[in-house]
Amino acid sequence: MVYDDELTKRFRRLLKSKSNITEKKMMGGICFLLNGNMIGGADRTKDGQGRLMFRVGKDNVDAAAKLKGGEGMVQGGRKMTGFYFVDEKHDDDILSKWMKLAVDHAKGLAPK
Image (cartoon, rainbow, N blue to C red; front, top):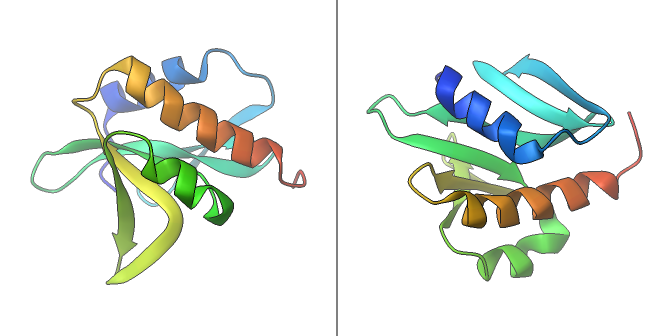
């Protein structure tokens, strides 16, 4: 993850002042957490592509497949089930649907 201030601000705006949100430096950027559980974050690849990352959880893979723009996250050659990258070029309507899925997933987890 390469930190990008504008993408991080966009992710923050998509959260729309939800309560119990914290920010934590992770993976070279800032991740957003709800009650201590990761929702996601934003970064820019080494070749300049901006993307938002959402943790929707393994139980929401089918719902995520129905949403536009998501690509399963692969890290170190390993598929990270329940994690998706969505290109920054998508509008806020699409990104808000991804955010809702990620926030709903985090709400269903025990607080940390």
